Length: 337
Image 1 (cartoon, rainbow, N blue to C red):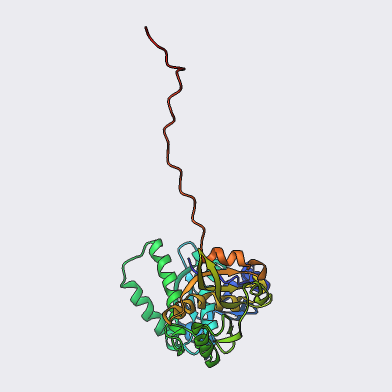
Image 2: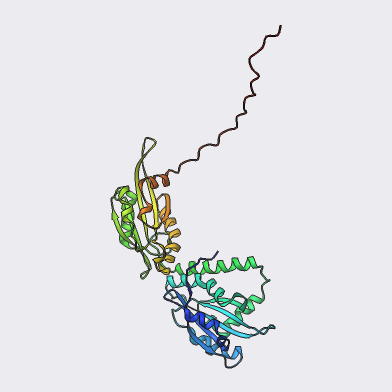
């Protein structure tokens, strides 16, 4: 399944689709603003679709700014207009915008109407958005064998994942395997954490600078952990749990991802959610052995019993074996003379 962003159409966009006047537009440019899909430009049809392409599509393309374009083709045999759906995500766009636009494509297609879209392609450069770029794409698609619906769905998911991976890979990571860079302060305190000098780190993902940074570094008891969870922003937490288990003294690292519900902006939730897996992998490949991990919404979800059960899950009681019941008694033994 593709990632859902929670972004919906604006009121004006919905009204536009409900009006028959939009059939006169050749080209509609749609962008994400304030966590809504909004129409930024709509341009009337003048000539046929080929003559109108470059003079409409190319003026919608801006350096570093992703967008969606719905381009109206001619009517089909049923008398309905067909559309080409273009996702423009340039290489120099910010990581969070690349992720957001990739993950919202399916939502926009559903809002516009999947059955009205006959062609769907993605581009990273203005050349790919030109009429010649579209024709090259259409030619390459025509040379491929038709796909089943399941294959189309898999291809859609793969496209979204590929965009996110390729667009994030341009950042140099301080931790090998991590898609975002980390600050020098965080790197040095991760070493302290690994060596046992501190037992708690709180990490913030700076969505503006697109980096992971240290927010809190301290030695705390497990009872203090819940009070460290912020109620207004997401965070990652690393806690080295010092405890006794079956007579042995142990230290187990617990990873918590705290996110206080849907009051958090969509972009921020997406960045944290998409980065979590690679951050965990990078930590483990760099010597931080994670014993347990959990996603929580607030500090009330954290207490010593909960942490203990996370690192030492209780085993289910063994299933009782079947014991054949004894035969019913036939009374005392009688002496036969």
